[in-house]
Amino acid sequence: MDQLPHESLSEIQERYRSLVENLQIGIYRNTPGPKGHFLEANPAIIAMFEAKSKAEFMKHNVSDLYQNPNERQEFVKEILKKGQVKNKEINLITLKGKKIVGSVTAVMKKDKDGKIFFDGIIENITKHKKTEDELYEYRKDLETRVKSRTQELENTKEAMLNVMEDLEKAKGIIEVKNAKDEAMLASIGEGIVAVDNLGKVMIMNKVAENMLGWKTKEMLGKKITDLKLENEDGTFIPFNRRPTTRALSTGATIKVTYFFVRKDNTRFPMAITATPIKLNKKAIGLIEIIRDVTEELEIDKAKSEFVSLASHQLRTPLGIIKWYLEALNEEAYIKNAPDNVQKYFNEIFKSNERVLSLVRDLLSVSRIDQGHVKNIPKLTDVTKMVKNIADQMKILARKDDIALTLDIKNKEIPLINIDSLRLHEVIENLVTNAIVYSNPKGIVKITIDQKDDNIILSVEDHGVGISKKDQVKLFTKFFRSQNAITKNTEGSGLGLYVVKSYIDVWGGKITVKSTEGKGSTFSIRLPIKMKEGEINK
Image (cartoon, rainbow, N blue to C red; front, side, top):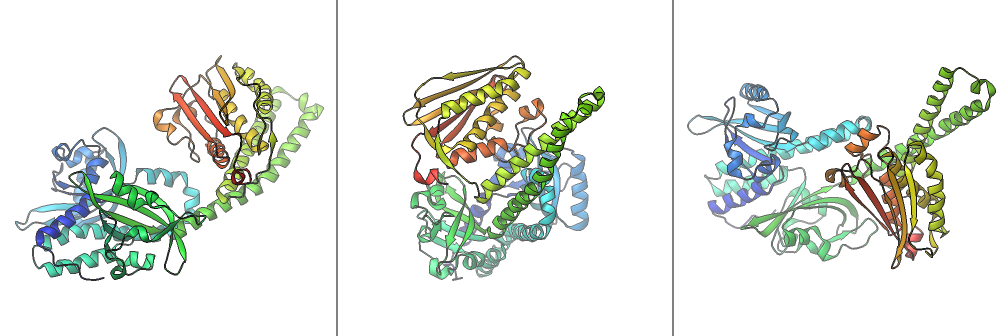
């Protein structure tokens, strides 16, 4: 890496201050007392604990942020004894009462007067812990890779701690400081590229050089947006959609994954986090953290293939069990069996049906993730299909004392070229959900209409509803809203993910409007004339 231009102490301090304040990991300094008093904190930790301002945050003791303040005393004893702690998981609480899990790495230091203080970094791993619990079975097969990624994360944390230490030593010789700058950047396990407000490269670390295939001296002063970024299908990412452009224009942190094309035209999937550096609320540059996610995508692919294989293997014996159960049910000795025997038989049949349904959902998700969905479009009368589904679903609705109605706004909706089997699955899924999550003696209303060149289908219920917070995650894999879990403990959380995946492929759109305790309305918009690419996907 070329030597940076000669800089003054104040310029170096400002550069480090900008780096620390724009990091997404919380950095702090505090006293070692049982309660602890904050001496310094960066914006990331202030945001993490939901403080209105730095001044408000600094008023609180460190122990105020522990779910159990006694754990603060244990933490102090450990760091005083060992001199440091690494990746310690602590149950914390924000100033607004939100419970979170933090991963803390800290070291004990002394100032020039011999007074002890703690320097540390903290990362909010609440979502990570939740995901870890949900995917425990998958993680067994991935332990080796996870350990490797964890080591890289530890290296990054240690490098971040060195920032404070290097800043103190910067009061000495500036030349030594520049050398430590280079060492710090080289030690971070992920690629770092710093650009100015025009997107021109100012700094690159060694990891970024190796990843991108460009040397720092080749890139200095050149625009990062001149390098090639593509979608998975090879289409070029235009200038206005580049993460650098979006982050500088909006002032927001942008996280995306694209394919980067090296000088030799080889390419790899790259996760990019572009964080603006702000001065007086204006972006004066940004830092991009880049990471090669080839291995992670391969892990996802392996996971999908495993789910597909397991589901295929399960479907056959479950189907045989269902066939034998249906055969046994036709036998007179089952029909004439004691009530408790018939009850047990029915429970076995229902349980087998639930598992079969889950296996079908897993197979659908696996095909979607691997791009193996077979789409067989044909001219389809959507109105007739909706009528048939409504007639079939009335049996389930009556069982739950639900009134199911159908309102056809337009009697002359044209045929559309679409995969009728998958469309049937989409509509049936939405109507079934509306019935299951309705309140007793409720009403489920299906409406079909045509607006411009689109077919509009909506399913409205007056059931438990969905919270605003849960609506954001509603169409993701394995997610079930809290109200849905309370109403019906069964369910895989895959149905709406499959529904949205199909609709996206057709070039359509699905939306939801919901109020807790009052019900939900799911609306589908399907283009009557689909593009050729959408028909054949």
